[in-house]
Length: 354
Ligand code: SF4
Image (cartoon, helix red, strand yellow):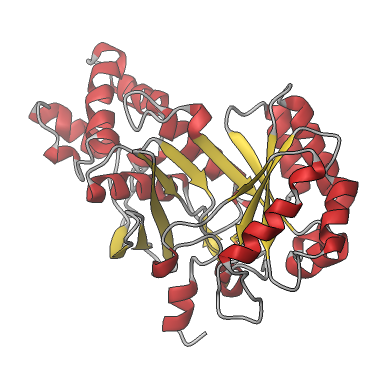
């Protein structure tokens, strides 16, 4: 009979306190903090792949640490760099599934857009990932390692995280919140809580839980469309959580933020979401609370939805100016590499003949 081998947890899925207390249990090290700091910094901040690669750790302590933690990494299978300094990364998971992450550059700062699921079950029509279906939820370390690996490859310090890659983060709450907590740790990635943004398409009960838990990160909302019947066609999640319940949750979050705005993401689709009826629906549903509307011109994903030209998108947002809330147009980085909003997974689908 072959004895079962216990694989220790991946250090990239543990908070600094969890690492320190595991080491402290063994005794002999100042409450585990000194060794924990050195290892945590070495793996998460300096990007070493193995504990053996971290300088300055005595052999006996290194052996102890290697028994306590694994340090496995995602396999980077491709990097597609864009002219605008953004890059799309594809990572193979241990089970063969592939997830994508995007590095974005803005005013000298670097953002990583991370995936929280392999695929996505929610099937938004403007999103290639939605065509893949759900493969599985990612573990916390698999989310954190996207940031570590991208930072190491690009030789940059990541300042911002957006959970806007593959998957619906609020369908993988525990791993996403654990990963976001790990990303803030000092020593470690040291990303400010204010610079971690989690985007949801409207998992209403999870939005309420987020508010009640008083999580420190920023939640933004994928509105898609604002005419309820159109939104239902574009975002099937609305069958489960109705438009009014979604908007009520958004407004509760706005009150929770005490005077700070909430961000709603709107997809501008030619001949579908850019008409007078859409503007009228915004007037009806979106006035009276503190919001910023980000208009994202559709990025093509190979279905029948048609993107507006840049001029049409500008003209549309110009017509929204009188509604009484700020409107921004958000052009996606890396579109030439299918790294724009809604495009993750497109290359994988093409490769699979989908
Ligand atoms: S937009 Fe987000 S929630 Fe919708 S299918 Fe794509 S990944 Fe899933």
